[in-house]
Each structure stands twice: as C-alpha cells, then as structure tokens.
Length: 488
Image (cartoon, rainbow, N blue to C red; front, top):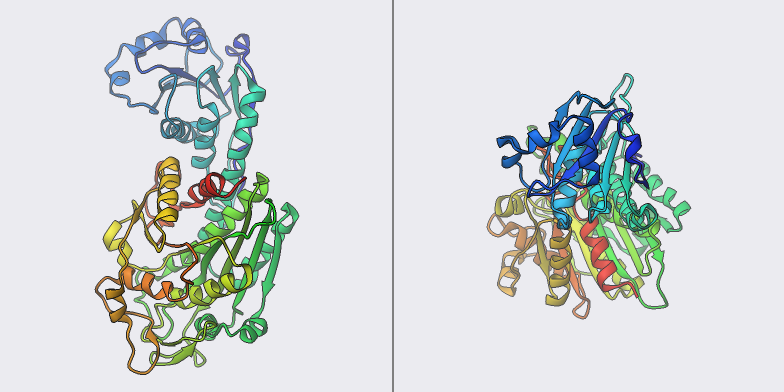
C-alpha cells in the first residue's frame, strides 16, 4: 500500500541550518514576528526574509499559506519556505500549513524549523495527508519524495503526540488506495485478501463466502452479485481493545464495480464506478487506524463485497428477493443495489454482535450530490445523540457532514404492490427514501446513522488535504467519534 512520509522529530540545531539541503521551512507569526529559526534564516540570507515580510505578497497571505524564496544567499538550500501562522494555530490552520508544505516540497528534503510552535504534530499530519500520490500503475522510475525532518524544542513529546496521527494517516492512505484501485485489480477476492492481511496488526478477520451467506439468508446481498463471476463476500473485522462491553459497529458498502446491472448506467462516466466500494474502504481504513493506535474500544467493521454486472444470471427489474431479516423486496431498479447489500449486513451485524450503536457508510445515491455537492456527506439517523456526536467529531476533523431529514411519510414512496417494499421510491427525495429503506433493517433500540458519501469519497479536483481522486473522507471523523464516545 501507499505509505505516508516518515517524519522525524529532532532537537533544534540552528548551526545546521546553513548547510541543510533541499528546502528549509520557517514560521512567521501573522503580525510578522520572527521566532529563533526564522531569525537565523534572516541572518543567513542577509535580511532577505525581513524584506519579504514587508512586501504586499506577505500581507496577502492567509494563516497557513506558504510562499517560497528561491536560492537564498548564504544557505545551501534550494529555497526557504515561509509559512504564515500564528503561534497558537487552530488544528485546521496547522493542517492547512502542513498540506501547503507538502505541495511545495517538490521531491526535495524538507527541514521544518518548528521550534516551540504549537500543534507541530498537526502540521506533520497535514503534510503527510497531502503528500499522498497514487501511482501504483504508472510505469517508469518514480521520483523520490524527499525526507522530512522537524526541529522542535521537545522532540520526544511531539513524536509521542504525533504517533496516533501517523496511525490516522496510514488509515486514510489505506482507504484512498482501495478507493482508487481499478476494478480489475481490486476484485472481491483481492479486497478480502487485503483486509485479511490486517490480522498481522491484531485485528480478527473473518471472511464469509457465498455458501455461508446463502445459509444465513443474505439473499438481497447475493442478488446484487449474482451476475458477476466475482464471488460475493462479507468480511468481518473485529478490534477488541476494550473490556467486555458490546462493540460499536461500522458497516460498509463494497461494490467493487457498479455497472448498474440490467438497469445499465450510461457509458459516460461509468469508469468512476470503481469508487462504489468507498464505504467499505472507509470502514477498512478506520479499523486499520484503531489497530495501529491500539484503541481502547471494541469495534467491529463489516463490509459486503460484491460486483454488480449484467449477465444471463443477473437480477432483473421486477424480481422479488427475501432479505435475511425476512422482509421481501421488489427490485425495481438494479442500479439501487447498495441498499440491498447493506440491508443484509446491517441485520447480520445486529443479530450477531448486539452493537451499542451502528453507523453504515455508502456511496449510495446521486441525489445526495444534488443536495450537498462534494462539500458534505449526508447524515441520516434515528438517534439525536449519535448524530450530534458524529457531527461534532466531523467538525473537529474538518470533514463536512450535514444531517438530512427522515420521516414516516417518505415510507409511502417505498410501497410495493407485490412485496413488502420496493428498493427505490422514485426520483423525489432519492437520498431520503434510500435511508428510509435502510432504517427498516435497523432494530428500534439500536442507535444508528447512515452516511451517504457519494459526494465526498472521491472528487475530480484536489481538496485541502488530498489530491484529486479518493479523499479518505470519514476515517478521521469516525476515529475521533470512537475515541471521544466509546473509549474508556
């Protein structure tokens, strides 16, 4: 998998700055005040830094912005990167600064003169996250990324606080890799194998194959994958870091490719459907993060892995399928397949694990894109407490989410003439009726939330902390939710 940059934290040694190769980073307060590292660089460059701070360019910089001074006299470095940042920045400002440094690094070694600046660990996290690059399928020699070193006044303390953030970065990278992979590489077999490999981190991983799923009665899930040569699977990942209490459950939609089935999608843009397993990718990334940082909580992650293909064996519009719960579903549109996968996995999670709460994630509807664009995921929930806790965690991590309404009136749109329900409710309120469908497979006493991440899982343009493509949205927010609400 793609691995985040290894960032070293070491004692401040300003005598080494003059001969440092690559790029040297200094921090300047928003009022132009220089710390010890910046003063050293200013002296070495014969006050070139001070002259820059008097310019209109510095005045226009916002908190977290970076400007580069090329080929500074008196230094071996190719450039000095000037970061405008207050001495006590917010987490988001610090991460922004780190992300801007990652963009400015350009394959050079980076020496960051952080000194006593607050949130150096958050700066490092932003740098690591924005340094992601998915080039596994590009030929030719890849350019070296360059090393990253932070000079800080208390390196051991900063390294200790940065360690769980390094685990978060690795979890995000794992999610991004999975979501970016083409479907001929990330088959259901390959996906399951990558998850099974996390047993070496201390996770318990169990793979349920098609014959076991049939015995359990997961017919709605199996109906989605029956047109594909790739076998459908459910993978269960358990992290038992808490006491004897019941676990919190995460459930992910893992459609490794979605043609729409017999209700075939238009050709234009269908190549993007490699990301339709984004929900399962987030669940996998969270479980990896929890294992790496040895979280003191019990969490189970379940993902339904299928491929939705048209063939002579594929499910037809008009077919009626019985779920594991026992309810029957008239399948009006085979392109509304994610909810069929989640229905069975949600029910199985409750029956087997009796979770204290449950969140499912899915790139579920185009309707949520119409409603919220790429800035926010849609949150649907039967619990104000769980919803509020997640929104608080998402805001703290800078991951946009917005609570959407649910109401019994929307259930009328799912009524079927020949079965207990239809799998779609028509064009109106499409993301809400999808959530109402899922709620039918959630027990009344289980706090539950559904996250529709169709707009946030993968994007065409870069974001603050990610290049174009898979974002890893949700890993940080869910990790924080678990840390805040479920760790002892």
